[in-house]
Image 1 (cartoon, rainbow, N blue to C red):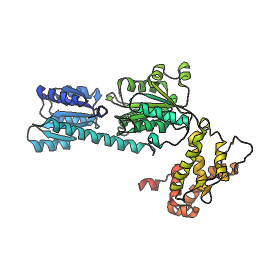
Image 2 (image 1 turned 180 degrees about the vertical axis):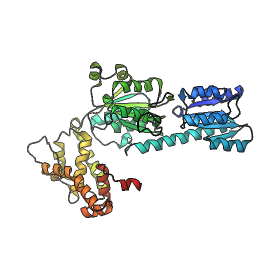
Image 3 (image 1 turned 90 degrees about the vertical axis):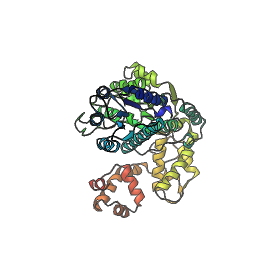
Image 4 (image 1 turned 90 degrees about the horizontal axis):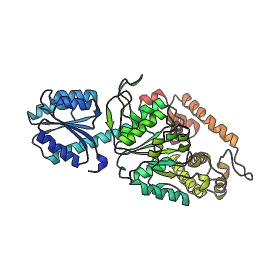
Length: 461
């Protein structure tokens, strides 16, 4: 078993010899293991820490295993429980399963058998974490370094460094302007690391108010605040055994910074509204477009956290400093959007490329992507030409873009036109698309782009 498959396990067994054998065997498999001899001692631990899995005998002195199981599942439903029994096997196991046990094993058993049951249970727990994560995340593509587009020497140096640090499992800080691709590099590092088989969880620290960000990161207990109708796991917990990418960490407030520092130093945290400690094994990659050292000097960023996350710094230069990447990026996005819009294969002419080269792209890769998306959608024929490229502020004075004011007006009114068509067609997307003369694929894309929703669609999901 790989060390990154480590789990926090509690063994409850009054037979001290068997307990020690199980303890030593699970420690050999790199788990963080604790051993207690009765249910009362187990509850004392459960009230302080959250365990990934509890392995308990059903026949215990004092409170029995079934009663312990009920209390554990009531207070922390995410803890998996495997029960051990040497008595009235089937009937007892059924009672245990009805009360929330994940699995059971009958004594005597082999060590290989119990280890396999624990591995299977933890694999299921990780899968549930992945599903929970996917329910709350945007659709993102994680690239290998070989998949990242660009031909410039500076980008190749970044990718070489990313490959070198990928397997080191150290904390990283990625710096660069907005839109340069910090998330792609973080994803590439995860993909090439020993954690690649587990979640890569992204959180934009600038996108949410700090009180909501805290719940997003660490989860919350039921009743922790108004609207917390059930317990929810946070992104840090979802990233257990994998990697969490904290984008724009410079926007995080000092209180949350201290909690991230604790995750880095102690590998533990509590959910919002909770008192029990959750242990995690997670790699932290951070990114910022700000000067963190200046923020430290201004008292806006913790100095200890700054040095803790800045173990390795990878700086991604802006597009204006690596213009060799403009053409390959443009061709990549043309191919991407011709496929998404169900158009025939398209090319781009030399004049259009020269026009794009002449621009500094302050929005970097993100701005190129948006520009190409619009050009592919609106271009006639199978070639993107200079007049299809809309750039509001161009660096050259000897060439003029297509009516940028008109293009801006189109972009501003596009959502309203789409909404009007949907209303007139009773929110039936296929009919709205037909009335606009666009394909179903395009209208689906635009609905997603503008965040348009309707109660009927939600109900029918």
